Image (cartoon, one colour):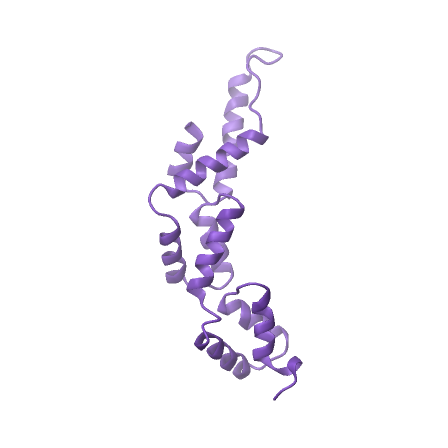
Amino acid sequence: MQAKRVNPHYQALAILSRRDHAVHEIKQKLKRKGFTAEQIKTTVARLKQQRLLDDAKFARLFIESSLLAKPAGPRLLAAKLKQKGVGEAIIAAALEQAFPPGREAELARAAAAAWRRTHSPPARGGVRGGGSSAGRANHNQRLWRFLISRGFSTEVISTAVST
């Protein structure tokens, strides 16, 4: 048996023991550790056979844990999964499962409410007594930018900002 340091399967198991990874991530990490393409291919096939490496499962768990941490839209989650090397079809299936009708709007409202708690709107009347409408418009623009950065669609943002 190979020593633990030069055994790609052992190294992959050590990586997976900390958290789930996408296939692409495991390949990249093993490559950085100096393993050959053939060793990586064999290791990945073995991990898939053992059901320790599965992009569909990884995508579902990633979305779940991300949504538990903070509200996010499907666009942001899709971009993060794509960055991790998950395939388009797998991403689409995982997002469809995670976002039944109305879930995105619910999360957008929660994100908007959280943002509003920490960003107070401008006072009405103000010192000069006339600039408050511009201040409220700027406040709403900042909320829009925040929700867009969280990956929500413009239709959902429109309803979340107006409520």
